[in-house]
Length: 284
Ligand SMILES: Nc1ncnc2c1ncn2[C@@H]1O[C@H](COP(=O)(O)OP(=O)(O)O)[C@@H](O)[C@H]1O
Ligand SMILES: [Mg+2]
Image (cartoon, rainbow, N blue to C red; front, side):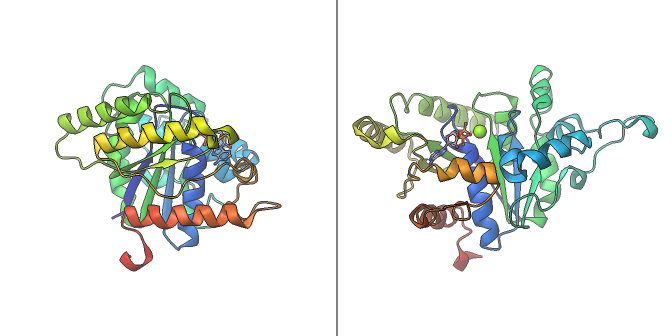
C-alpha cells in the first residue's frame, strides 16, 4: 500500500508545488514508485513535471484530468455517444516526470467548477486512489491554498500532511487554521489516520533569511510545539534554481548551471522526509 502525503498550507507561495515536484523527482531517484496528484486548479505541478509544452498538448488532445476524477466520466468525444464511466487507470499519465518513475494525475483550471457543485464529492479522490495504490509506494498530493472541498478530498486520501512554511511576517497566521481544520476533520472521520509528518521551512524569497525570518522561525516553532508537530531540521534555502528546475522540468541539481550545495541540501531534506513517512531505504 502506498503512503500518501498532501502538501498543505492555507497560504500561497510557500513552496507546496516546488517541493511536491522536487520530492517526486527525489523519490523516483531512490526507486520509489511515485504518483503525483495535482489537486490545484492552477495546475502548476502538472506544468512543472510535464513542461508547459507537454501540458498544453495534454489538454489539447482532451486527455483525462483530475476533473474527470471528480465528474466520474470521460470527456465526451462526439463519436462515442453518451458519457463513459472513468476507470482509475485512465486518469493516470505514465512517466510524466524528467525521470520515468513518476506518474501524474494532471489538473486543469476547470477543476474549480467542482467547487461550485461539491456535494458528495469529497471522498472520490480517496476512493479512486485506493483502487490503484497497490501500484505505488508514494502518492504526493499538491493542494491549492484555499480551504475547500478539495482540501477535504486531500484529507480523506492522505496518511500525512507536509506543511511548507515561508519564514516571514505573518507566517504563523495560517497554522492555527490548519490545526483546527485537521482537528475538525478527524472529529468527523474518526476512522481516518491523518498526521502532520512535519513543517519544512522553505525560503521562497531571499529576504526570509534576515532578522524578520529568524523571528518568524521562532514563532512558527512555538506554534508547532503547541500542536505537537515535528519540524524538519533541514531548511530549504532560497535558490533561483528552484524556479529554473520547474521551468526545465528537472530535479534540482540537473538544471543548467546547477549549484551542488543546493542539490545537497535538498537531498538532506529528502533523507529526513522519507524517514519521517517510513520510506527510508532501510525501512523499504
Ligand atoms: N526554496 C526556494 N527558493 C527560491 N524560490 C522558491 C523556493 N521555493 C519556491 N520558490 C518560488 O516561489 C514561488 C512560489 O512557490 P510555489 O511552489 O508555487 O508555492 P505554492 O505552491 O505554495 O503556492 C515560485 O515562483 C517558486 O519558484
Ligand atoms: Mg502551488
